[in-house]
Image: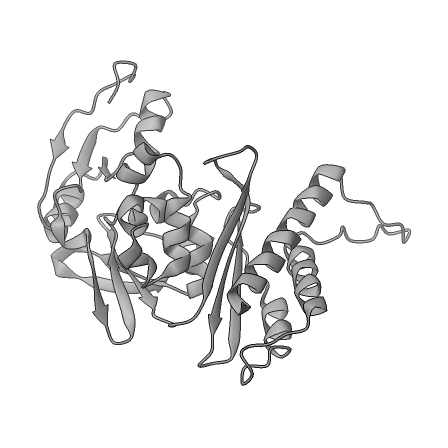
Length: 297
């Protein structure tokens, strides 16, 4: 915490297990959990947040790694972006590794965590569209050793929320053993917040394509009709071949689904999208087209 923080925390608890952390949060309802602190401490230093107490999660070793479980990877919420960006993890979940490497400069990647990215739920969170495309599931730790599972999309959409004294413990991700791509556009050269991002994964076992668009809305968007349409055009039995025109059409389909034209006025006239929005739609189309092309190649 910098010297510019408007108010220091009154208490700091450093549990060593997930259940101890949950118990600490239950005992101090006003406490705020903190892992990497890349978003939390920025809010504290700017005066937007004044936590009465902090529960530090950095000493909980059980959530800082991953394991295999029934065709899935069980990822600890304490995994840092830097750890997820390494080659061994990239071989496991390529799109999530690519998103982790794009999360920002080294100091952010070394501190920021997967669970923090999800809990903060900032629209520009790079891991979020990847988790949406992978249809990941969250394992929530509650009091008394309780565990419950919810789809990550439910939390991001506000369908299901974390209850008092609960923490994101793990993220369950299916291992598809197929190409995955994450691409993002920023407003400047080098690491930066996404203006738009696209995660695309292939599911050969189900002959499906899953795509999620991030940063352009409060939560990642799934263009389901575009996914189903392009999946029918792929020759899954012949090296996943597809005609080049379909790539362009898919990009435009995704962009139009996520950034639709305005509804007609009562008099039948149609309002044009502003130039900045049209540019964003073209950006999404380009990202989706490139992501599918890379995955199929």
